Length: 217
Length: 217
DNA sequence: AGAGACCTTGACTGGTTGGTCAGGTCTGCT
DNA sequence: AGCAGACCTGACCAACCAGTCAAGGTCTCT
Image 1 (cartoon, rainbow over the protein chains, first blue to last red):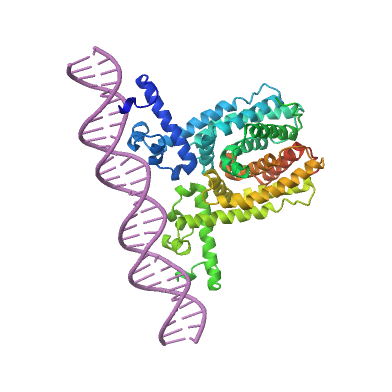
Image 2 (image 1 turned 135 degrees about the vertical axis):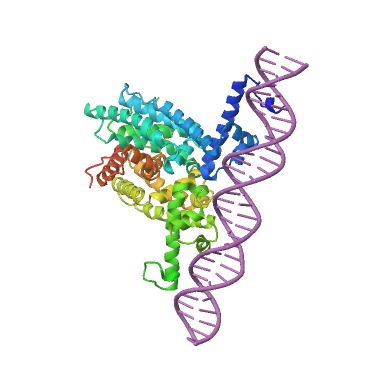
């Protein structure tokens, strides 16, 4: 009974294992986001996905290994979104698309963003290597692109890193500080507000580096 | 011996108590910032300020009470800085001064900023009331000022809240994500970099809302 | 149908943590 | 000097938590 209890029509062995792992990862992501690594308990994660605690340890050897998988998954999603920063496109297009994508991520992957923020804030003990390799490389390529734009006189002469940090910080703020944002807003942001916020961020950033934001949409 | 061991020339009873409390709060701020509430241990805080763990409980009844005091202290510092958003001044001046002040805070009170970020990210269980009262009020007054600027045609018509979030997020990024920033920078930011980052943020924000950043300094 | 791999789970354990407390020390006051 | 009250601290405890385990259940393949 127990094994076929899940609502999904039981697929192959491997499929079911994957499903269970994903359910645990989803639950873990939320719990880690709400309580931090230290504050989260395996029991809480187990409760959140309706499994006995011992089951978690069957799928993930330790709390730390589970946490690492959660963080890695977030990073992959982030990386995927990062590709929307098209190095070939016009600056207006590339930046606008990238900012919009990151705002979407903040809305749809709030917990993931929080876990990532937590991890970095505490000195990135688990994913330091990612920072030094993948993130470093990605950043350098985009910095190079921005420098080229500057050299071509298309945008104002600013240090590219400060611009990237501004975009990262602002977009992630809507996930990491969602509670504060929603408190000040007396409730969750509406679709219109998300759209307006995105457009405002795009507008300030583009105009801020000397571009014409043009007509949105 | 123990009581007079502190380097300070022992003052009055009340002074010494205050000194000890501040030493504990300082240590707690760092430990909470590095490990989060759940990950921090009273023992680690005790070690960080060179006191026996039992002493902490003499000055602060519980871990949670100590944490609350740490967060409250941060909030007070934040509020003080918030006053540099002069509602009487010209938009360029008010915003420039406010951003610069917040950047300084990020540099000098990194741990405090992290603790605050942690608290809000985890749903502000301790300081929800501050968000709903003091922060709400402060925000509303500044939003009103920005709306006035817009009505007077001095800055572009944008939702003031999105602008404030952008400033908060960007400036705090340099504290909360200091580890990531420093990794990508291959070391701590120099004074010149701090200055350049501040100037860049001011420039993008001001230009972004249709103002002339003018000549810095 | 039967064997063997795979999965599930309640009960348990060793270690850690927040918090307590009794007994001691020091300070300021009379 | 002597006393009262503030301060200090090592040792202790109950609660909790990550991780283990053995016994039993289920699925797949032949």
